Every structure is written in C-alpha cells, then in structure tokens.
Length: 245
Figure (tube, rainbow, N blue to C red):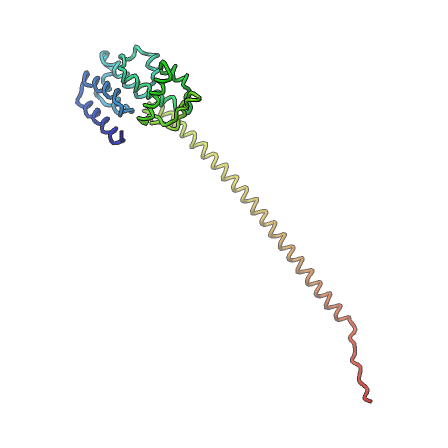
C-alpha cells in the first residue's frame, strides 16, 4: 500500500478516537492492530481518549495491547500474557511481523531455527510463508536462503520508539558528536604538523637549491676568470715581416 494510503488509514482511526470513549476506543485498538496497512501506533497511544483507557481496569489490558504493538514483540506477549487480552489470529500474525523488525535490528542474518522457537511456529513452511508475507508488505526487505536455512535482511520498516529509546539515541548521537569533534581536532593538529613539516622541508630544499646555484655561479665565475687569466698569459706571436726579393 502506498504511504499516502497508510497515512489515510491511520488518520481515520485518529479522527474516530477523538470522539470515541471506552468500548469505542477498544474497537479502534482492535481494528488498528489487525489492519495490515498500519505498523506505527504512537499517535494512537497519545490520543487522549485512548490514553485514558490505561487508568480504567476494564480497559487497561486493551491499552497494553496497543502499547505491545507499538514497542513490544511476540516474546513480550508470551512472557507477560496476563497483562493483555487474548489476541486474535490476525493480531498474532501482525505481532510476529513486527517482531521480525525488532530481531532484524539485532542481526541481519536470522536463522530459521531461532525464528521457529522465538515465534512459536511449528514448521519451516509456515515460517517461510510469514517471511514472504513480511517481504510482500515491505515490513522487511531480504532474501530467503533455504540452503543455509536463514533469511538475509537488507533493511526493514521503522517501528515506534519509546521515550527512553529516544533518550538513548540522543545520548549515542551526543557521544558520537563529541567523539567526532575530538577526532576532527586531532586531525586538524596532525594536518598542521604535516603542513609545518612539509613547509620546513620545502624551506630546507629551497635553501639547498639556492646554495647549489650559488656554488655553480661561483665556480663558473672562477672558471671564467681563470680562463681569462690563462689567455692573457699566453705569449702572442708576432707577425714576420716579408722581405721583398
């Protein structure tokens, strides 16, 4: 589906959430988490009427489901299953697709054996169907390597980021920026040192070349003077007068 189509579907749920309460918000959560065109949920989570569900015991598990789809994985669901309402088959498949994105961020090579266990899939045929579905929906981009029983990931769609993840990313970027500035400073110093060495070598070379030129001029002048002196000291032959017969 096009990006425009995806945005319009999410926008529809956001508009509905503005005027919905309790059961209406529960239905929006179920529909959105089953919809194959929606894979980001932060905006719904931040919708005031849906956010209000977390403080109501009869609806809090539905809110946790939406939060699970935004930030969690299939294993999170399995490990804390009592926090959530039971998921439909469509929701389970979609949660597994989202889990592939999270796993791909950890490794670009996903082994079939690990995926079968992690996603509770009984056989390779069903796993490959899920992977093909993920590729078809642009959830992941990769190639199935049946010989080595793995999927090679090229890239994936983006998932929602929790506030703490954004903070971690900011810290990583800040550290990277600080490190980059330090590296640039060291590079600048090294470049200056090299420039100074080159300039010094050029200056020494110029002095050397000038000295050689001065010596050449000196020896040329001495050679000319010596030649002139020798020429002057050569006895000149006098012309013999011819005696007339």
